[in-house]
Length: 117
Image (spheres, rainbow, N blue to C red):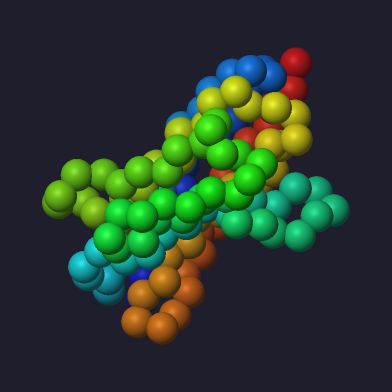
């Protein structure tokens, strides 16, 4: 069993920053693809940012230049972060972390990010 847990969500004013954390643990080894998705009320879940084992990152056009996905150190490569800067009300959503391991997808329960004045 692989467990995925996110943390770091909260309420922030427009223009502010938040840093989300995600750790995949349990029956998982090696360096795996990990990604952040988000789902706003009434909208479909969308990919926000991803990082593959080789370190290549990808971003949704709506967050390029504002969000950065990164991995933790050599001993904790299945911990990733999402640094979110210049947050806007349209970034309000539940943010979900995801990992793909041995042909299966594993999701965290999500963390709420609310951008409001």
